Length: 461
Image (cartoon, rainbow, N blue to C red; front, top):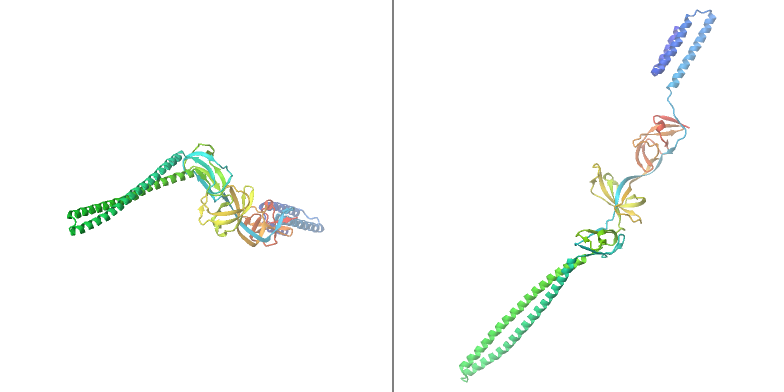
């Protein structure tokens, strides 16, 4: 009987070596009960050898059954816990095209847009357009009244007329003076010729003693006097010509000054006619213009006119993606409830810090492909294509994707699903990039893993 106890202790030690304490206590209680019964049986005096033999056989069978029961109990206790999933969703890993994108926010702008300001201080006189009207270059949008300009114009106009009359008077006076002097000189020239002839005659007569010497001398005095008069008249003529030219230049300069001043006033008057410098649509009007005689200060904003056919959207994109962007690249833009395509036409060369002070941004300008009339200043959101890769392993996005740092999936193998390590790449739209751990054609569970998230293996039905 002692041998039997040793055997039981051997099995007890072997079976309970790696068994938790709770199960070990339960086992000890069983063995103590068996040992007690065996000891009690040893204390009973055998009645006969036949009975002893029968008792030994029964005892051996009991012990064997007990040992098998204990082994079975611990074997089943040591088996891993299983979880069965009946209804589940699945998907196969496929190889396809993977489009990497990034999101960006932007604003609708109209590059061909002008703000028209008042060039002068005045009063609202006439308003010819409304917001939304389409205008062409040099169309008059409004007229301002500047009283001082009218007074200046009238005064300068009168002064200019008077100055021109004065110039005409100077010109006529100079002409008459010069003509009179020229006539005087012409007569003196004739008298000088005649006096020269008289001098010659009296000289010849005096030499012939036919005339007195005094007559010759008188004739010579007359000639000299005429020559002096001629010289004085010529000097007066030269002075008259020179003075006339100077007087005319002075008067012409005064006229020119008046004309310049008048031109400035006319320009100022013309500027009171507020004109559109470009073709486009009137986006805004200063409300004061609609109230006649309202004061308009110089440099007040009056109109905003823009060409709505020339519309762009400026986006702020993370500088780290600059190397993946190209002019002509495509994007999908959403403005309000409208979605449209757009193409990149300009990529900024200078990065600026984002409002968070952590990220560098570059400006990307895009041309929308739409017939819609976009509102300047409207907010836009774009999905910009960065890179297109072929033959990429992909899985559909679903409840199986618990976090962005997920490292495993449940790979279906027959009627089981095995927890399998994977390396995920980017997530774009409904596609999840698989970098490692799976192959094309592998099937995984795509439903939620929350019910069996700690299981390494589950059973499928």
